View 1: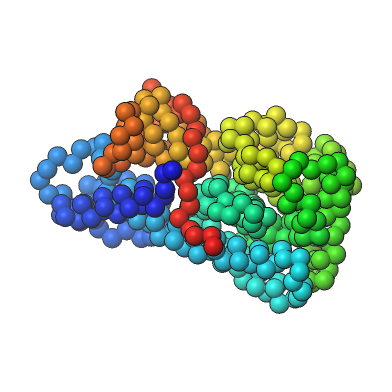
View 2: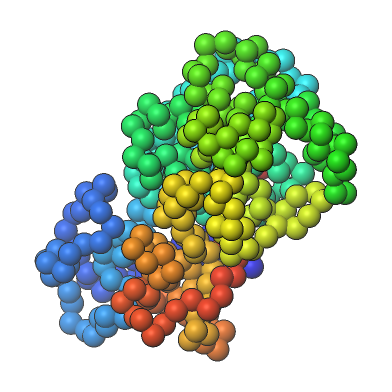
Length: 370
């Protein structure tokens, strides 16, 4: 299986090669946008030699360096989130108000990290669980991270992103009462489902024990995230405008994340199957949130392996909001299946005859998740 660590190693080797070639780049602020203009690139000092345009550009080498650093930071945040989820979603631990402070502090930091407009967190959220028996904790963390991503796409102010992230982290807190059911290796029975449908009510009870002063928005998510705008959800069959926008976001991401991963009683769905199911249920989830999901996460999410019509295999490196089917791809295997010593980058939006033929799978995340 391909590994992001291998890709990052190749990127690091490329940067070292560029240094050896005497390619000096003027200092660039870390928070600058991903693409340097041609004018900026022309200011670099190049040594003699045919540095071909198909090679990875200097700006891309810089961006990869930033991406590598972002991945390290997100890995640390993800590990912290996983540990917090295990603590909070442990049915045998005593509920205490101190964990609310810990959760608030974590969400504040996470919002700051994800607000940098990088998408490296998606590589973690969409990769396979390291330990499938811990799927609930991974699910909680992934829903939190991706819900914040949707909030960013909706233009939420920081305080709303924090509130949404907190709500998303707590959305399934009531399920701790039914751990024996959700961990069954076989398909759940109707009786099992009827019991599980009570978990929003139990979740509200837990929130009240944690802190009755949680915002109304957070209570709404725990109570409503399984409601659907056509009234087909539970526990109350609430419809459309009576369901909070936070709950609509978390409800959609909850389904999206679950379908993209294995469960004890079924295998995961492919990304195309998941997106098609969601698009075929616009009356259930609502067009506005679906649109932002596709815009922010993409038809082909960052970090996914794709096969082009040229038979080359690459990694989705950058999405294209105007043309979600035509992202920027880093080619790592040629048409004969041979690994490239130096990856090449193709912007599919600038190469209309080249397109993605098949989406393979998400690369393994670099964090340990122990």
